[in-house]
Image (cartoon, rainbow, N blue to C red; front, side, top):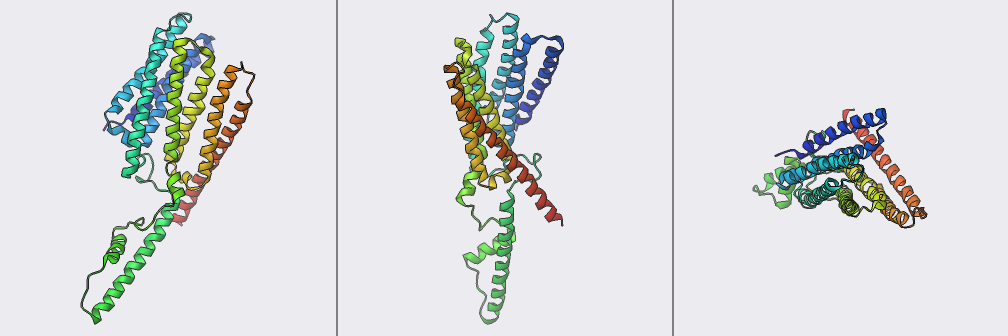
Amino acid sequence: MISFDRAFVLVGLAWLIMGMVLGFYIAFAQQVQFVQVHVAMMLSGFVLLTAYGLIYRAWPALNETGLGHLQFWVATIAALGQVFGALQFVLSGGTAITLVALASALPLLGALLQAWLFLTRAASQARSGSPAVKPDLVGDPHPKTESLQREGARSSACVSIAAQAIRLIDEISTEISPPRCPNSLQLKLMLAARVGRPGLLTFANSEERKMAHIDRAFVGMALVWLVLGMFLGLYIGVTHSSQFVPLHMTMLLPGFVLFAAYGAFYRLWPSMKETGLAKAQFWLSFLGVLGQVVGAYQAVQSGGADSMLVQASWLLSILGGMLMGWLFWKSGEAKSHASAHKHA
């Protein structure tokens, strides 16, 4: 199985290095006309391809389909076309737009393929109970939250005690009656104690089940904003409606990049899902980005006069970011406490 996660990240890092070199040249030689090429390298090259790689890494089932090959090459060629299209546009003084227009369609196709793969393969991975991430990404090949580990330990102890009690009763009963076969409940309890399945008799509550998919919710919304942003970018390139560029950037940066990062955080640090604050963090971020997009459209239509919605939405996004920082901090603190208690 090909690891598209590593391939995407390697190509993304290559664009990052080239973009940094070009950025140094722009600053050193005062060649500001190449800023558009620099932006294409950093956003279409580094940010987008690296985000794709992280999604493949967090949901390994995406690597197992032939569409992964197509999506990788479409996205890679699209980034290359956008960079060279931006360079052609700059060198021609803004007259050559053919390559830019053609290259604008490929990122949209790549985004649609990524969204389709995520919606189909990520859901099937969740149903099959496959590991969330590859073993070398985290220490535990089957990541569990701290609360489920504690609950499982208590359940395992109860099952072991119950199995021992049943065996003691059976031993006593054999002295006064012929041996008898254990019933189904006895077999279940003994099997649970024997094979070490602490979760055999435990069930997550409805809130835990909802929060378990918050990573998929964030990445799914990120891909929605990516596709919408790509459509708008294609429209801007074809019709030269440059006034919608701020709206396009809002869809891609706060919409796609931020949501994809949040989804990766929840996926790679699953203990952040344990608290109800995760739900508040999701809705604060969702409403913040939605308000920014609608506010950016209002600002475009009003010529920049109406910006109150954008300001209010930024406050929501800031609260969402602060809450994410708090959840991330507390997840690391809880893990360190659990590790210290384990080695005590």
